[in-house]
Image: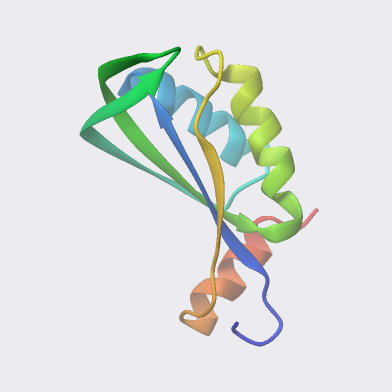
Length: 109
């Protein structure tokens, strides 16, 4: 891990770019994440309630501090239309120190 930083990426998916952008903008505005990337055009195949489902979705990647991962997840769940949204915390084990410092600075209270 980069010294002095505890950064995570919070991964989630959304049914549309419009919904993802609205949620991402609100979560960044609330200071819970420094940045969100929205990647359109994903096809998801998954098992749900015993059936194989297919959905076109967008991926969202929030860059934040580890101690804010759960508040980001709560904010995602509060805004998300899915019964069980995909929310995973991906620890960052290294990176450009200046970038990691920027994430810390943008998410400080």
